[in-house]
Length: 316
Image 1 (cartoon, rainbow, N blue to C red):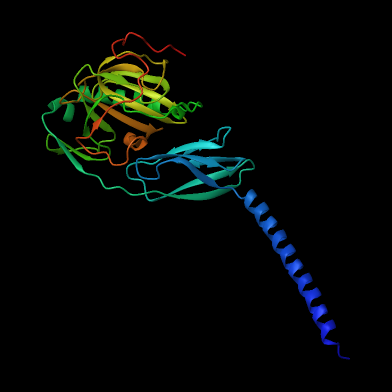
Image 2 (cartoon, rainbow, N blue to C red):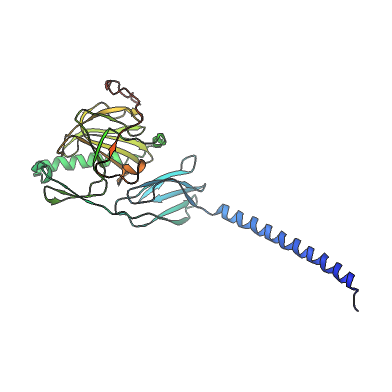
């Protein structure tokens, strides 16, 4: 039996429309299914920070997961955020583990940028600060233990949300990561930023935080550690005077001391270091990506009048 041409065309048009409708329906249903599956797939998103050696990032984690990284179990805050840091020599691929409430684990990889470092030679240091005797070494080990204990603290408040600023006005005399040769002898890399300034220059808190260490140490002199929360902290060293004590809460820009040359130093300057727990970070990365020796820096946010250092932070 043969159909008239008009009937055949009507049949094809009807069925083609039906097939097209079915294809669209299947596609939409498949898309919805994929979206549902992806919505249940854990993931990590970099919210803020620098993916490179010496940097740190704030990650946003899918709901219902904790994060394990470098032997630290991190519980996301109410916004799903955790903070992790990278050392000077970390590999370009860093693996973290997402852990479900039932204990199931999923690996995630972050790719970080590799950096090149310079060599910095410093001469004229006191011999007992470069090659200390046994009595001095004992005091140095005591200082190291005290600093390590402070770096284990994990405050749950994100004080770092205040943002960061330079702690003092001066000239960059040392950068992060440079291999140090002291009095002709190779030593550990420089893990911070040095800012040269006249003794007595006001020193400001680089960000909000709680003072978790204030001590006079052999190598770092008068030293103050400010905890910014989530394992992140700043350490300022070689101070001439200190205006805060352990337990104080400080605001970004607040005067906390004066630049000096206590400890192992050849001239007045402040060493600004940052760390994530015991991982040493590059503090300059929170402000500028291409810091060089000789650059001039200055804080922009000043909370207290520089002429009134007696105004102290209130204890919390």
